[in-house]
Amino acid sequence: MEDLIIFRIFLTFPLVGLFVPKAGIIFAGAKGYISVSDVIIAITLLTSVLICSLGIIYHKRKMVGAMKSDKAVIVT
Image 1 (tube, rainbow, N blue to C red):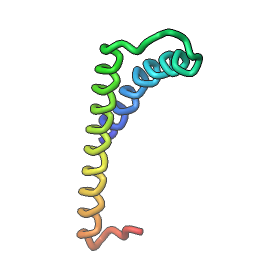
Image 2 (cartoon, rainbow, N blue to C red):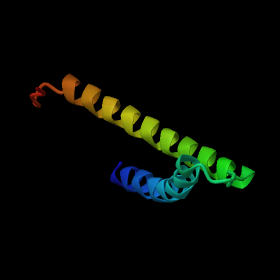
Image 3 (spheres, rainbow, N blue to C red):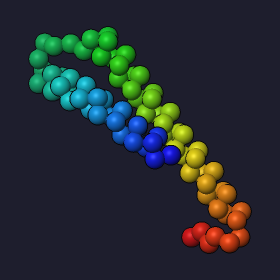
Image 4 (cartoon, rainbow, N blue to C red):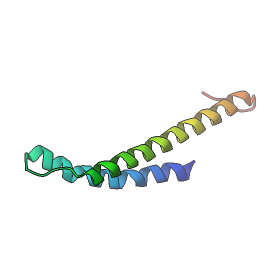
């Protein structure tokens, strides 16, 4: 699970690097545009982050369920 968390963190670095310059162009009111390839890359990265997040949530719920069924472990 730690590998999945680290992978999700490293997926967000290019996503932030993609959004910061484009947000600057939009907020500055410049005549720049956002290319189709930037949109495709952003959607792909967001989808990958979402899939990783869902995998982490599923794994945590599975572990908590296993710990609750184990009478030797006290879960608070």
